[in-house]
Length: 422
Image (cartoon, rainbow, N blue to C red; front, top):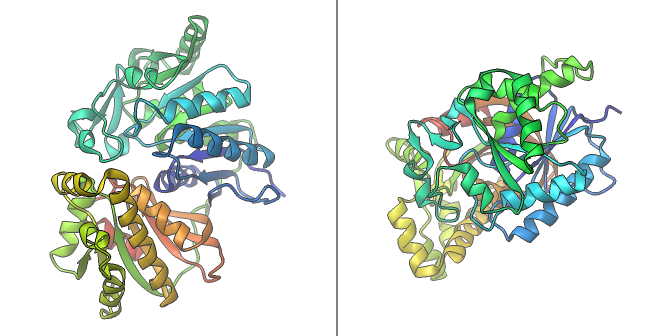
């Protein structure tokens, strides 16, 4: 049995598929697990991605889950590890990126790693330590209104330093531009200066390939999915990996389909608005859920009445989200929506639905758990950062097609493209 080369820990489900998509594009046969598998589970793949739901939980819990994932990945024989988080660095001053990175370094007995959430293909770039989303700084991108992890400071050195006791440095763009050897020299300088973590600038895919080369000997790399671009070539150069031309192939899947959207991001709002112009949709009202009204049953009946795919959504504007949170509380409002969409997904699966397009990281996690999916085979890219996937482990038995989309990802017509891809 072939042992995995690269072991990845993702702090949410859509982020995991985003990362797995990058690895498949690099010719690595990739399997994503939902949570940490049983200790004796063995999976044959070039890369393994463990999807956690740890982005917004308590930092101590995120650390524990991440260490459990690391232990399983090490048992699979992985030679290098990635801690993957959002390309908008979603976190608070209490964590969870800093605490998890520290804990993983400790467990691996290593003394340095980089932090690079850049994903230029989706407009996330880092310059002089500042994160841009498109042409604006992070704190002007709409992420300042995120209901769980509002990002109000674009300087990632400052953001990460508030989360960790380790010293945080910076690998500036002028160093990146000089190539891998210059980056390795800068890493040595930072380590001598007492830094254990460093934000790495990147404004293009070429920068990420150079960073991948420079970090080939690091036990741990942290960042967004883009950081994986340059890693397959390292294993190939070491004669450990042969390019898999058919790494993204998936079997054809028939069956009914539905779109479920729980994200309140700008991108998902635009996707919902585009769908509603010409196709059937049903809105989940959190206030109605809180009053105990039969919203789930109504949504399921709405889907059953249509021969074509429908959209069931809880997506709202930032002002609407804030109003609901003020009334119900942030945590309760989020859980009500997640639980409702998960229950709808479970009911529709029992009705014979086999294809699910899901928008939002937290929503995707809830839906995948409700469908009892244990692992996913990663297929072709739908939009940058979002692949088609197919379940390979479920008590339901029948394979399910899933497109799990981070809230901020995807073109306006993403839902339509995803349904075709599945």
